[in-house]
Length: 145
Image (cartoon, rainbow, N blue to C red):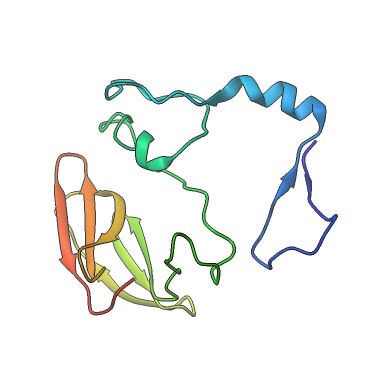
C-alpha cells in the first residue's frame, strides 16, 4: 500500500508517495518507458514513464481524451532558468474555461471542436495553442503564462 511521504519537510504542494516493495513489484511491469518510433494507432494501457515532449508525438490522436501530466509542486523553483507564472488556469472541458488564481471562473474561450490539449507558446508566451481532434487553434491572451 502506498503511503504519503513524511520522513522530511516537503513543499506544501508536494504529495510524494512511498511505495512498498510489493507495490513496486506489482506496478513496475505496467510502466511504459520506451517511446514508440512512430505514432501509435491504438491507446496505451499503463503508466507512461518518461519525457512528455517525446511521448506526446507518439500518442494516438483519435484516442487521447484526457492527458494528466505530473504538475510541479514547487512553483518558486527555477527550471532551466525559467520559473512558473502565477497566472490564470486554463481548463479544456468542452470549451476552454479560464479561472483566476483565486479559482473564480473569469472567461470561456469557445472553439469549434472539443479541445484535447492546451499549451502556451510564442516569443512572448501569450499565445495559447489548442489541439482538438483534427485541428490546431491559437488564441492571443492578454498576459504571458
